[in-house]
Image 1 (spheres, rainbow, N blue to C red):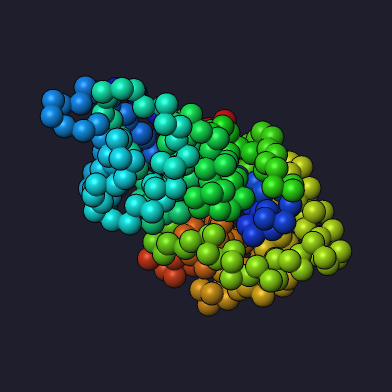
Image 2 (tube, one colour):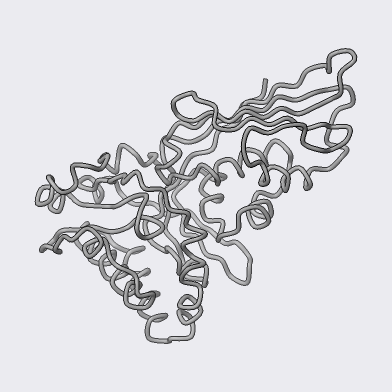
Length: 307
């Protein structure tokens, strides 16, 4: 048996704007997804096949499929396996060992609806096994910038950018002391970041045409990257989401939740706006503990993998 692991991700900033070349700041999570591969002799009087089973964080099967390795067609599938078909078309025919069959199993460690990267970790894992370029697979199967795939591949905090469809990233660290009073509120509302980006695509096109917003967002990104204390970091995050909210006409979490911003409080979407995850600091959490009680709230430093 071969086993592969890929960590989940959290995007601190860069949402939407990363598609237009702005740097995104993202972190790997302690929890991720596993891929176990079993290769065995094809039983006599049977045809070589690949079977795939996907298990959620509770050990329940959410997808199972079987693929004929002679006809290169799907035999059966318990769910929509169209994304698997695209991947199988990319695998070289000489990859398969003669007379062998394959069983692949993926196991999520986090809730599929948490927004931590069930798709990106899958892309990373399956690409490693099939010896494919994970960024090419990501582009052709799911689309998006690929920052989440980069996190799954490298397992480090990154500054990520997409320039002329070319992926660039470099390691970026932030002290745990700066995030000691941060919390992630998992809303339980799954948002497809790629579909969410399509909804604001026209406004995104204006992002790099408007020199004011472009320069301001770049300036705030540098402020965040170079922050050496929590106050500066949190101020930068608030400035970033305010600018993006104005440009894309999106509601900040304050408006969405019907809560007022408070001095030195922080409440910011992580990733796609309107769902998945919120970043809140201790001051904000203590002020609105009752209102946020419906969410699954975990300390940032317990979710994010140590560097």
